[in-house]
Image (cartoon, rainbow, N blue to C red):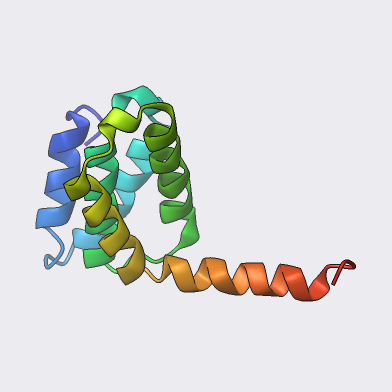
Length: 117
């Protein structure tokens, strides 16, 4: 998988979501993509990988949190890479992964323990 171009590896992971080995392949692809330099992935690649993780129900923050940060950096540093389709795919995948609820709960817990109140 590591010798495949990112786009092909991500598509493979997404297409094998119903196969018995799908989760294992999805985890390996996610780990491999996270080990690549950020410029090796496009914003669309990251959005597609988030979609594959959602289809595979890989909700571990170890996978999606670094991808969310990478996507943020890509959109912030190069806003021209942000198109409506990519943003929509990413938001849908993040919602299906439960990311927004997890992040909201973390924020609420931090606010409750903050000495500022």
